Length: 126
Length: 138
Image (cartoon, rainbow over all chains, first blue to last red; front, side):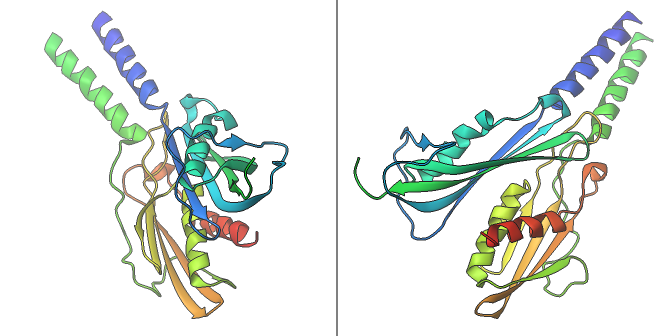
């Protein structure tokens, strides 16, 4: 009986662990002409509430999609930012503006967290 | 006797994990034939290339991995995610684009469900079209 309890507990833990699945997808689409990606490690600037003072042009639409099952907790913008910056870098953007987020759910136990934003490129040197 | 109990317990454990919804490859139910009876249609007043970009954005926003990407046909599938009760994923989405005029594109979207994990699956046709409308109205 003790062994059964231990094995049942083990199975329960295994089920709980695999229930914590998180999946993230990122994508960018160019709004016009293509640009070469920025080098790896390039620091993409993020403008959450304001806009850059320097002149710029909007070059890409950025998307990050995160899905988490019940036991994985809730997603936040902080979870999406690294992938958002990576997609911006790949699209050749210097910075990110117009960040918007939305949350929905599927089958009662999967949370969908979407972030969309716009990648921009400065048109004049600092 | 002890071994029998152990086998019983392991079988029970395996059965539980299977019921929760293990990963499986999405099974395509419908062939990519334009004009098939299933699916949802919509018409957009945009060129085919613009609508194709909106389809790709919409599929990403609804959690589909894009597997085929052609000018007039796109296919994606939602990866299986194991959950505590039903999980989610396993659906396949097929999208056909037809240019009716230079600025008019007809879109047909069709969700196919896979056998395993079907309880946690749903039809994504309206969600994909809604995301496309949002993108194309900007």
